[in-house]
Length: 140
Ligand code: ADP
Ligand code: MG
Image (cartoon, rainbow, N blue to C red; front, top):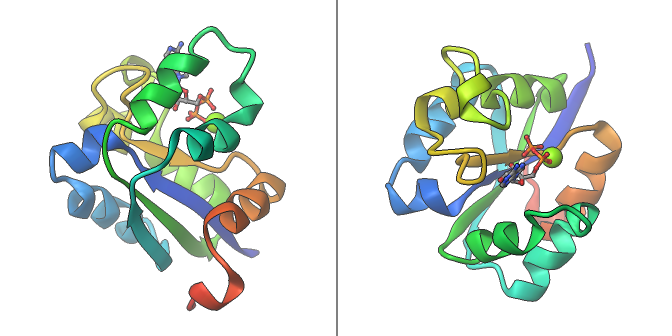
């Protein structure tokens, strides 16, 4: 089993409802360890750059508006197969399709305000982690 790191973001709908601890308890219970963490307010430029891969999607403008509507918690999670393990605990993008016991089933409001972001591959995780954190800020 490979020890990986993945980028996790607790999104504005969740910080607004004060459930960051409840969400992180689910990640920790799944064996993931928080090795870097920062609560920040994204600028429009940062949100657009982070979601650049989605810039042609119809929901891009709405997604950026939502991601800058309140604070987020950006964090690095570490563990065995962390990228897939984190995505599994997050659940499907649309909470209507998310499995029982997942963060999105439990907490997401709708397909956009879905409480959490997670990297979707080891390669993207490395890029997304370096978007928010320097090596010195990650303490395993
Ligand atoms: P995921 O976050 O599960 O990797 P995507 O990468 O496809 O999902 O989408 C990024 C984010 O864009 C989603 O988490 C959600 O906040 C938003 N989003 C995705 N699909 C839609 C949609 N159809 N309408 C509105 N927002 C969406
Ligand atoms: Mg994605």
